[in-house]
Length: 134
Figure 1 (cartoon, rainbow, N blue to C red):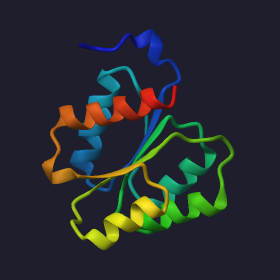
Figure 2 (cartoon, rainbow, N blue to C red):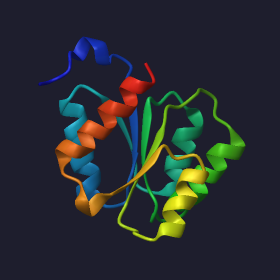
Figure 3 (cartoon, rainbow, N blue to C red):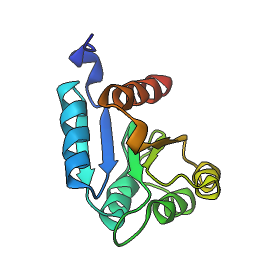
Figure 4 (tube, rainbow, N blue to C red):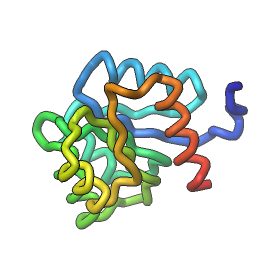
């Protein structure tokens, strides 16, 4: 069941992902559900956009060019933003407990394994975290 698009006004999601196919998939999936999607292909662009703020949710990969997801998380935690952002959800294929714990302690709401997620699960996660913040 599609959400009422009228209720999604101003629900913005930032997707920071360097894999072009996944970036396109997440963008199409979320746009089709009525979300406004902003994209970043590397950590520097993602950090710049996240610092502007105003996102209901940020989907952040860890392995990124120029600045990795952990650096982005750390700078957001200590550097602040112009407008408040919603939760940050890490999407990664790294399955190292130390890194996963590090993302949570750095402020991520949760960490999900990309290789195990279906598009429906990604959408469910987005909806869950966006609804929590409203």
